[in-house]
Image (cartoon, rainbow, N blue to C red; front, top):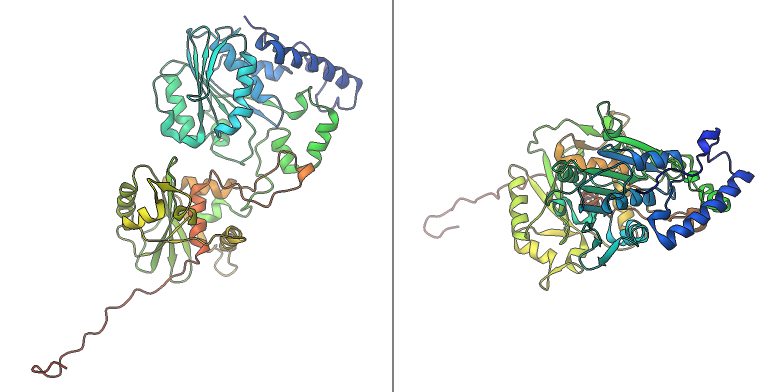
Length: 474
């Protein structure tokens, strides 16, 4: 069996990894762990050892569901990879499963998987892996176990399958994917664990992990616990962080991140109970269409006094005719305005040579295209921000969101949407770009705002002139 005991437990001696920076002890640890790292890269998991007793506890726990919270470069990915590999090869010192077994490893997208989880799995399991099929993204182990690499971008339906013995989720997954993975391991009494840096604020995982009746075990490590990092690199990295960013990126703590797009958004202020819409509201629909992932639709009601409410969202799968029918069904009873769609749908996204925009138009969804060009995204976001401000006279903001299950995705986006960030902002500065790739319903809302939604009166029936003369007409 593998040895998952830390060889040098500094906590036994009353030491802390952060406070030994600049000491001879830290320098000796740095050189010692460099030797172990080199051995791991050459031989694999047989030479693996955890940095601290917290890493060790995560590795050895027999709890069915666990989370390793850690700052960037805190060795959380390699620690989770070691736990997963040990289970797959039947060499885990405390966890016993059937052999061979089936496992899943998932990350935000396949590009990140190659540089993170997949690299760690291939290095650690080098002596035990039979093959890796890049096309099917499957690792086959010599003992018959198989590991399927997956991506959150594929959507929760790609996580529907037969029973799975172990699931490792690298970084925070969407809630629906986590629930699906839970079901897969439930059938086998298997194991599911997450390794993550909580960069998106107080999300669903925070509520899950820290609710009173939660049974998931939580372990926390920091950037300082990775003794292979040079002190100069650590100081340069953390020097560019604000205090809030440091809490998440260094210590792995949940926080409302600096760089948040809508820092004024508060659930108590901007989320309200739903109410029936009368004819004094016009409903605009925003559409963020996709081929490989679900299409996001959002419904924004604008009142006669200028008040705005996000009344519902849709996440649609299927063909465009099927999605158009679903949109029509959900829109019954509303006084509809225009629809707004991503301008890329007319040029970049094609199905059998026909762009998505034209296909929607052919099926009765005649959308306007959101402006594209410098400043267009910023304009939409700026207008949303303006509508989030509380009016001093009414005590309410212009824009509010119905408190419904369908609106969970857009409410989460308002709470967690941030700008994109370089890995080392101390070197490159700060990006002035919104990290919107996972926030499709927010994109749909932005398309509406880029086209300036406003209330308009219903058109009246034209007056019909009575004939003046029955013989000649008029």
